[in-house]
Image 1 (cartoon, rainbow, N blue to C red):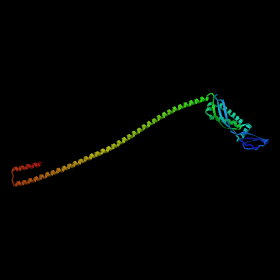
Image 2 (cartoon, one colour):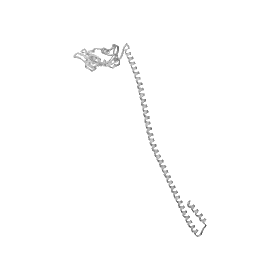
Image 3 (tube, helix red, strand yellow):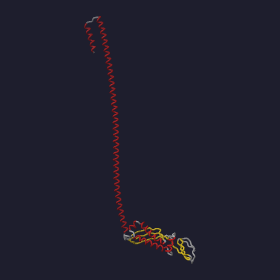
Image 4 (cartoon, rainbow, N blue to C red):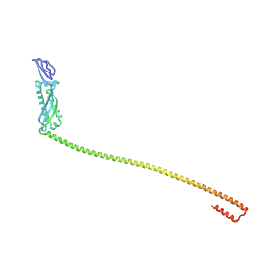
Length: 307
């Protein structure tokens, strides 16, 4: 006879001491001389409930956890322990034993913690239950695949009050945070305005410096231009004066030349008259003239000479 299933097969009887354990597979069984017993290797899902368990501060709470357990068929030692513990039991009976064990450890851990520790740090609570239950169930050949805290509640509104307190704290922190944010915003705005004003003043100072430098350079340029202009005007006036002086000198020279010519002409005229007078004297020596004629002629010559 052959047997095949997802279970542990334990053969006992003729020539079998200790029994043969086979995790799945096939085996030949001799009827009447050998018998077969099975243990399920399926993963069992357990709803672990602990109602009204008093915590460390004496607050009764109810906790529900979800656990996944399984008989470890790959580990021969654990498989042997499971066969010794659960051989001949059904899957429901094995699940019940594992459930009671988990529930006992869950209650023990709840009693050593506060409500706040359980409620606020569920992962820590789950890890503790998993660790303690695994070390105990492994002796039975059962391994804890996973454990998760599903629900925490109480009948005295402790968690609700805790939630309200936390809500009030959060609201308070939110109001404080909002006030701090507004304060920081006002401070940042004031700093920004101060930086803006400082930048504006700095810009105005830079503009004033640039304007001052421009005015100084412009004044220097204007002074240089005016100096050059004044020098040019003075040079022009000086040239005009020199030109006028040259003209006056030329005029004077012309006048001198003219005066010299006049004098020369007068001298020539006097010389001519003297020659005429001498000629007349010669004539008068040959022909005696009346005395009044001579007097008139001499006076006329004196007039020309005086001129």
